[in-house]
Structures are given as structure tokens and as C-alpha cells.
Length: 243
Image 1: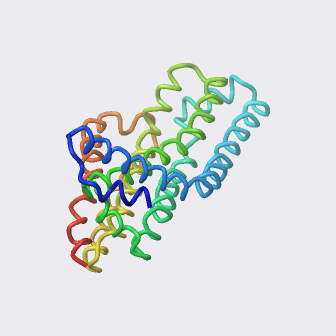
Image 2: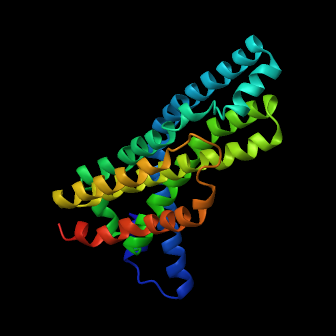
């Protein structure tokens, strides 16, 4: 009752307005954390398992072939022991997007956001902020595990190539997350199909890992696209509100 009275009381002063907005945004972030913390732990375990398997396979190869032979095989043949991990981050982005937005859109709970005493754009951005932050955190832990293992067996130059070769997979995970959000928010079926096709076409171009640093020169292109994709769901919000 006290909370209701606070929101019904006229707010005076710009500081009070900012304070209420901050409280609402933090409440949205906390709500999403409460909803996702258990599935997030499961996703973290599922993402760590393949990275551990790859690290154990790398250790086995070096123990069987010897350091010189194994190193020559990996380096001169441009073999990347971590390429099998490429599809794990996009899978995590898809699952996290579904877990976060499907219940909200299916049950109509996201409409409550439109009635909070904050701008709905800020509320949706808060949803995206917590989702992308959690996604990057889950993807980073197995990535750091493989990087730590790689620095035991390979020189420093290999580690820089490891980072530049694998960063598109994190980009792909974020793109998959954003397109999942857009598809679930979009009320029209025809547009849903178009967004799915666009997302598949874009993400499928980020897995060409036949050689080191394939996407190094595309960082200035992919980064603005990623930033633009972060604001794309805001364009769908008006059509979602009209339902």
C-alpha cells in the first residue's frame, strides 16, 4: 500500500523524477536477474562442458605427439582447436533470448512495462542490458578457460590470433539474441519470417574460421551493425503497443 501511495503522490522536482526512473530501471534489471539466474547457471554448465572437452583433447594431442610435432601440426596447418566451440555462443544467445522474452510476450507480461512510471524505451533497454550482459558473461567463462589452456601450449602470437578469430562468435551470439527478441516482439507473421531470414543470413556469415584472423578487417563494419541491432527492437515496440 505504501508503494502505491508513493506512485500516486505527485512528484515534484527533477531529482525525484530521476530517482523514480532509476528505481524502476533497477527493479526491471533485478526482476530479469531473478527470472534468469537458474537457467543461466544451467547454460553456464552446458557452455563449459564443450570447452573443457576441447582443452582435454588439446592436452591429449600434445602428450601423444610431443610438443614439437603437435605445435607444428597446429601452427603450420592453420588448425584451430577451438573451432568446434563456434556454435556454442549463438546457441546460448538463442536460448537466453527465448527464456527472457517468450514468457513476457506470450503471457502479455511485457505490457506491464508500458504502464510503469518510466519511458517504455528505457524499460526495454534495461531488459536488453541485463540480457546481453548475462550472455557475454556466460560466453566469456568458457572462452577464458580455452585461452588459459592455449597459453600453456602456444606462444603469445597464437593467443592474439585466438582472440581475433573467435570474437565474431560473440558477435553472432548477440545478433542471435537481438533477432530472437525482435522476432518475439514483432506482432505480424510476415515480418517475423523476414527477421528470421535476415538474422540467419547475417549470422551465417560469421563462421568462416578456416584461417586465423579472418574477420580482423571487418571489426569496423561489424561493430556499428551490432550497435544498430541493439536499437532495432525499439522500432518494433510501437507495433507491439498497438496490439
